[in-house]
Length: 394
Ligand SMILES: [Fe+2]
Ligand SMILES: [Fe+2]
Image 1 (cartoon, rainbow, N blue to C red):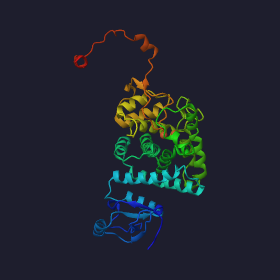
Image 2 (image 1 turned 45 degrees about the vertical axis):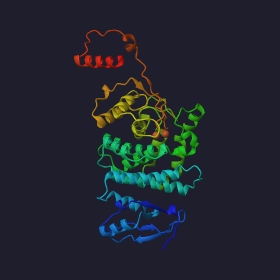
Image 3 (image 1 turned 90 degrees about the horizontal axis):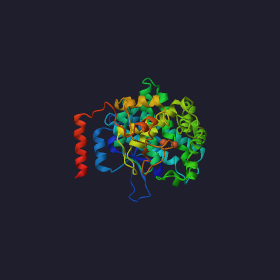
Image 4 (image 1 turned 180 degrees about the horizontal axis):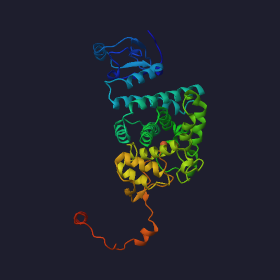
């Protein structure tokens, strides 16, 4: 019999336990009926093979199974190869695991030791490795669908970081179908940790879904550098990766393409490619993913709004490629009457997206209200207009 604190075990769904192969982890149950006083007892040892009958018996007998936290990575790896689990189920488990690590990272009530920070960064990397395996056949659109189907957490930063990580990998693959696994892991890990520095910012500012005061915004602007400092102190845990790429994502994800971003106001290709990809993933997720705050906009609308920021906030070439892959829309045909300000912050939860009317160009102003010579509305258009007018009148 082994007793331990609850924190040393994590619960698993019985449906996702590996069968007919040697199990790479131990299975436990909680034999205590008293909450807060769990007593974990091993019911199946690693190395033995569990068959479907055994699993059925477990299902009839136990409500919940547990695996020791130190075997989490073995569990994730076996899950990725488990043919009985769907990609959705796998992603949900990987997401939960990543949330566990992010939750440790963002726990502001706790002073961190460098060791704990390293463990969490290593855990995030393991989660990203599993994501690379599960998502290898998915493109941007199917990842968007997957993200929409995943359950979401109360803390914006967790869901958002995981989504940005997934989009980052998909965008990089669309830019370079032969991207190396290592690149995918680096851009995925950078996405997952892009807001790491927020753990140094007071929680009431991070969770504020309304308009921030100038003072609070100045605080927020410090998070890229805080993130790099934290990552530098823990990067050793993943030192086989190119740490500089992950650093660049953390440091530069709020730099704007036209040089108006923060913290260093660098622009165009002075911003690392991976950080420019992250800015697009960041923006797209903020507009399209369901939140407890604002309603989402459709994919097409999101692309139209993002197109207004082409060359200002985001890299126009990467964006055009992104648009083509996602919806086969011709990028220059994306037009919108509304846009978001240059300082729109996709990393913050938003109560209402701060849309504003697109400023008209000098030519548009000049032609405003004038009849365009040679313009004749199609019969169909006229009908629609007429119907709308009738509706208004009634
Ligand atoms: Fe950020
Ligand atoms: Fe973000």
